[in-house]
Each structure stands twice: as C-alpha cells, then as structure tokens.
Image (cartoon, rainbow, N blue to C red; front, top):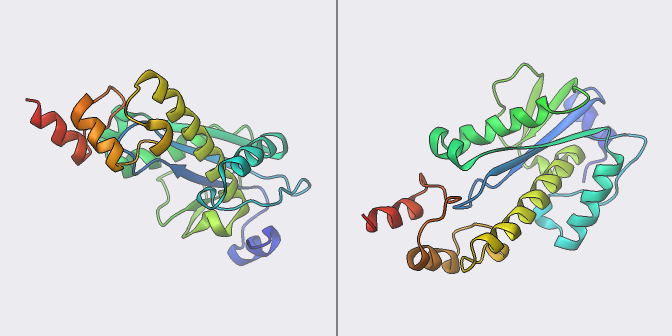
Length: 203
C-alpha cells in the first residue's frame, strides 16, 4: 500500500484527511454501512488494506486498533427502507454523508473510495480502488465490513434458515433458495429483483 505521506503528496491534500468507504451494496438484505476515518500520523497502523483482502481474524484485530488509534472515526448507515426508496447508490452516498458529518473532528479534506463523491460541503476527491491505495479508506472499509458482518451474524439468529451469517446477505444459491422456501423477511430489500420476484410470485 502507498505510504501515507506519498499518497498525500500524490493527491495534494492536507494531513487532516478522512477516508470513507461503504460495505453492502450487493446484498439482498440489511443496511448499507459506511465509515469515515481520520488516522493519526503519529500512531501508524500496520497492515491496513482493502477489507476484502484480509482474513476475518485480521479484520477484527485491525478494527480494535483503528478504534484505539484513529484521531476520529464514525460508522453510519442507510436503512433498508431508504435503500428501497432512494436506490442503493443514493442511499450509499447518504450514508457516507452521515459518516463524515458524525466525525468528532471535521476533516479538511475527504477521500472517498470509488468514482463518486456525495453532494456535500467538504473538499473531496474520489479514488478508484482507494481501499487498496489509501490507508484511511482501507481503515474505513475495515470498520464498515466488520460492523456489517457482525450485524448479519445477529440477523442470522433472528431469521434462521437463510444462512445470513455465512453469505452476509449476498445472493448466493443458499440465500436465493431460502428466499423462495421461507419468504421475504423485514430486512430484505424489496427493490432488488430477486426479492421482488419472490414477492410477486406470492401474490
């Protein structure tokens, strides 16, 4: 991963910079979760990377380290109802806005994973594959993924039979078959085609 000082030189941004990422656009159920993180340059965190490239054990360890060492962080979300009302892209951007607004220290600059920046008052830049290139975005991706994975494990207890602890809400064969046999739960996104198809078939 690019060293943080080299990255700031590349993007010409101040040190008090927040990284932002989201998790959960693809799943058929659950909230979309975002995080914003301002890292402390005096307390570097080794091993930050795209959360998808890390083991669950490593993500959990880094989650705790980020909590303890970051200058500021905030985890936010957009609900299933907001996803269905707004669409997943707009809901994700809304959740990102909430994450940055919730920081105890307001950043001078924001780097957002991907190719879209929310409509907000912050100076910001989108960074394609930022979760593999920008330490603060990688930290945000870890906080968001660990948070959402934990929530899906809890949902698995509330809605047994769907396998949510395993697939985390993504449209796996197991999940799709469970949807057809068990039906749609309150946490399923009704605007998503596989869920909508089950609802329509039951009418």
